[in-house]
Length: 168
Image (cartoon, rainbow, N blue to C red; front, top):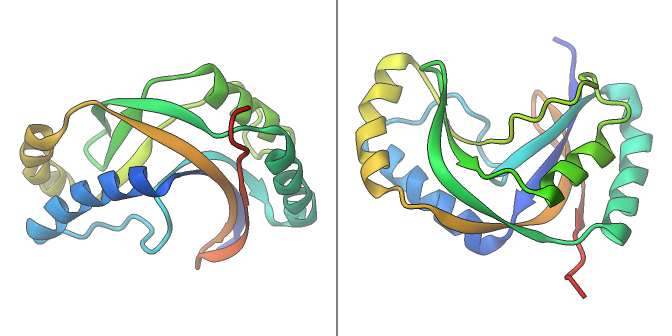
């Protein structure tokens, strides 16, 4: 299987904690899913060929110098079919600009951005089982994008991370 590189917009610790509350509901329901474990909750900005690693490491450095952390609102649960359950962030100028900044050498260079933060990838019957308790718990909330990181998958290999600047 070919490995690819991925740029991830990671949430701050307070937002990570909020996502872990949903994870606890999933675990309590005896589900675990097939989503990648042991990486921070995030929004994927793009996928890249493995030969772009040096380019992307340099991009991380540049992102950290010029991009600021930003808030976003998670307004709903969402589904990709009945296989992927995610939290849906409202689109923002900052998220679109970060995505546009990173997409130059992406494997998918179109203008689409299906921003989402996956909480569970599983079989349809398990998605249907967990949806009611998650929907009952879910209330719109504010989160923050604080970091951009670079990973290689699969298996997961952490390559680097930059912290976004505080707003002036």
